[in-house]
Amino acid sequence: MNDVNGSGWIIAMVISAVISCIASLAVIVTFFIFRDLRYSPFMRIVTYVSIADFFGNIGYLRINKPASGSAACVIQAFLNSSFYPCGWLWTTTLTYFLYHLATEGNTPKSFFWFNIICWGLPITLFLIQTPFTEFESPGDYNFEVCEVGGRAGLIYSYITYYGMYFSSLFIMMYFLWKISLLESKQSEGTKVPAFQVAKSALTLYPSWMTICWLPHIITVFVLDFLSWGGYGWDVIYFLGDILKILHGGIAAVIFFYKSKEARRLWYRLLFNKNPEENNGHSVEIRSPSEFVENFIHSPSIVFATKHDPMSSTDTNTFSISDSDL
Image (tube, rainbow, N blue to C red; front, side, top):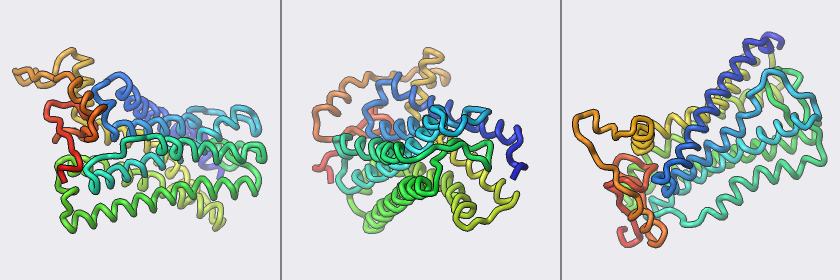
């Protein structure tokens, strides 16, 4: 087991966390500095996923482990145990919004209950156990963060923590299955351009959440419950940890790859011109005020252009209401 506890392994973990945190922070900063992008409900959810990944990964930005029971250890366990599940639940919400778009032609208008569930549930479940458990710095792996100690606390943590992951996974699979049924029946809601654009970009998030997290969870099950071990499984566990940490970076790559508007706004900010000017002509980026007005006061939801599911403010913006179905 000492083979995976050398300084090289720890540095690799820290570098992965730094990359992922910077990438997640880029999405968060994009949301806050570009008002044009704030009015898309999908953009809000993607930003919430990045916030969850950012705080979940902070615990890995260290070389030395905090002492068991210390304040730093409790904070590290809180960030790791609370914010990762927040990201899973927000990714599930993203899938539900896509399903709602396919069936209703719009997205839910209020985020109140989604905020209560996606932020409140993981944090509350962690706080409930805090007075009754101890937090320990893991002795087996120097690259790991603090976790719940004691058998009872560990069982409670596994039930709540991994229970939220598998619940999210099954719910996402259910909504994606329902969407595929609607498409097979050629439902009117799945034919509208907004749905097709949103689906092409947003289904990548649940897919990559599964890819990044499932190897880690499988190795945890193998090592903790089946008591298998050895250097090979330790390396697999380490690689699974790296992959789950890099989820924040991968989510950011998906966002910037799929959001033409975000890339254009950054280009305009950094170089003080539109990217189209490089082709010898300038294309005006219109003010979002008229679209914002529609978004706030109309029962219709303003969606993305044909090019960008994250923006609600491009020149080709259109809205979808129940009457369109």
